[in-house]
Image 1 (cartoon, rainbow, N blue to C red):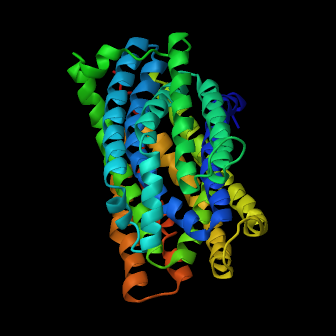
Image 2: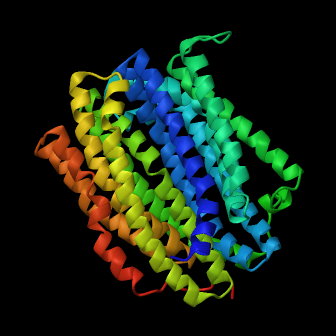
Length: 445
């Protein structure tokens, strides 16, 4: 093992993974606190939260394109180009964020109809969406800048801001959901408002960081106009496949929630909790994928192709070990999760088996995230992930899930099992593509 390589990896990964974990804690606190009110509030907030998830697909793609170019140009020590990449990324993140904000505020009930046919869940979810509307555009701003901070060796600072925001969000959740201290009791709307306040706090912190010159500045004129058309074209060359990948993958994952949402509130609630726990445990895996992308991207930007190839192989093996360890941790947590979450007996029964499925799912997720989102993307190879995910989800898993749920009327757990197959269906194709080494490319020359 190359100790210096892994020391560098964990210097980047630790704050990123911690930030992922803290973000997952917000969803966990929403579910835990709203679960004390009633199971319907938990289910409604989970379904309404799919809107934020869909928006994150856009921001993840925009930030992913930013990271592909930013990591290599930063490795090349070309700060001016990194500034331009940041401005282009921010432009699109804010534009799409504004559209989501307007939709959530103006047509929340119509949006909820996409996820469930239960009138109670639609009504409660619409209340959540309208209260949370402003959070989308605020999230676009803060998350985009967090992305460039990680590329520019400021991952620790972005983690501090993001984690502080999460703590604030959780505290406000308690205050606004239950009406603690001087705050009104707002229930599900309180959870949404807490998110808006936390995102506003992030924006203020990011503005302070930029004013103090702690990281790459955001050049406001470049938000509206950039004369570097070649850079803009290059950005979309790498971002467009990632966007289609994110929308294809995320749309498939959202369909999972739609399918489960039509199988009853017990299935919806159990699926929501299982997803939150899985996300918390997978935080380290996703942090490693992000760190791998930054490290290998820097190597490729410096034209260290041989070193990048060796590092890639080492990271692949490491991701499998991390995934297996994460799965074991998840299994060990099942009794605790079932004990602390207030669900019906039927929902608890679903939850136990869904968490068991999540334990093996996270192994494939760890490997595929590291290879597709880390190694492949670092060299500008963003098309493969798009094709692989779209075919796997929309050609195999989603049709099988819908067939099982709505045609064959299979039991809830059988449908849930079908919906955990995607990471393993695509493994052979991912491996074959990896050993072709098309990702070994310096895109800055």
